[in-house]
Image 1 (spheres, rainbow, N blue to C red):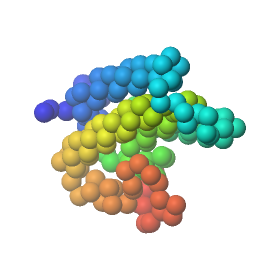
Image 2: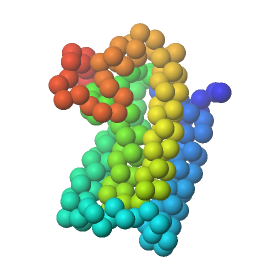
Image 3: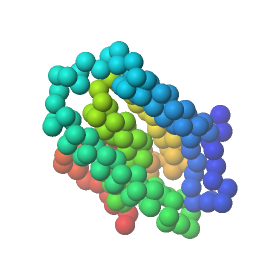
Image 4: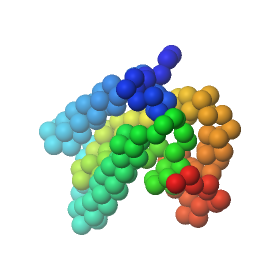
Length: 174
């Protein structure tokens, strides 16, 4: 399958052809299940009674803030900065994790789940994580095919989604 290209941006390599539509469908399915089970039918929401809102709301707030930070800063680096030619980006949030936009999506769903715990929604969230992981792997193949050893080195230096507490020899190109 050919990757989706950004024809107006030759400095961008491409992404999964169905990534955007898949993410939109995932969001719709999640919201249907989340609202349906969490607020209407309440079939699997018994955890809400076990875990206090005083615990869940601060965790949700932190996840929302982190999600917003990751998506805004990674969007600025990728889409607002124009480069003469494609390059492996190793600055900003991309020095800590390879896929900050996707992890921001995972965190957004997590924040919603903290506010209203629904076991069915947690299951859908798990499926979304698997979908996003597959998208990441596909896009990493595109990037490895294009950049070769430079991207393989980046993959060794920088984790996919969860930053290391102590960075090991990250080579920054700022």
